[in-house]
Image (cartoon, rainbow, N blue to C red; front, side):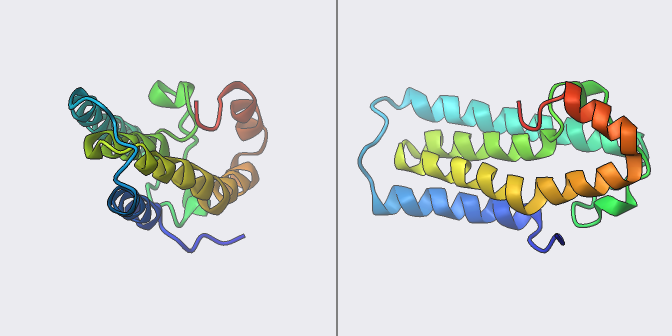
Length: 150
């Protein structure tokens, strides 16, 4: 299985899907404008999580290129990576959830669901295969103790 659709493209497709669903199906909508503020909180949290996750890779001096997991120099298992194996993708999902809230549209919540499913099949599973090949027992142990998403 090769990696062909960069995660950022999948994220942008998810964002466009959320926006499109909100335009196509303006109802049902969230009843209160407070949902928009909650959405901004999710978006901010997602960006912070993404920055921290990338910083952990930079500190470990390993590749952050999602299309080349076979070039990984280190298996990062500390910090955020103790709680989720994919904090970068989780951050993107949080941003999409926040976007749906900010749009005030319940139908837009389908986008993060589609994103998580697509990322799991198109990106995470091939990454896991590459990491298993490189790090063998260390990755097996990490996979057993840390969830893929949450």
